[in-house]
Image 1 (cartoon, rainbow, N blue to C red):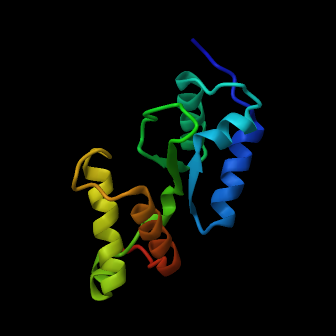
Image 2: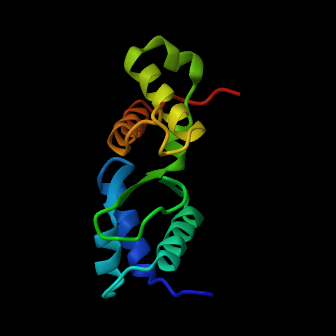
Length: 136
């Protein structure tokens, strides 16, 4: 079943990501109100995730879990995760941020070893601030 998602919803979320340093936590209630819906369904939330991914944004968790208003998810720019690992290892804060991102991307969001959404947002923002050049 195909669901129409307003481009203005994705534009608004992308604008928030840009204003907040490349990573922002979005509540499902915001998506519901941007879509002008009485109720947010999982199919619509999955479509929003797909449209965000098409614009170069990643979500954490990668697949929406619940569509109720109280749940939230992290939206961040993919390019913030591009770092020089040798240079990142020299700074404690950057190394911790890289480790946090690697844990988040390698574990299930419900694993006890996975970082929280707030920890991951801080890590992505740290990497975005450092924005170390990538070496080949």
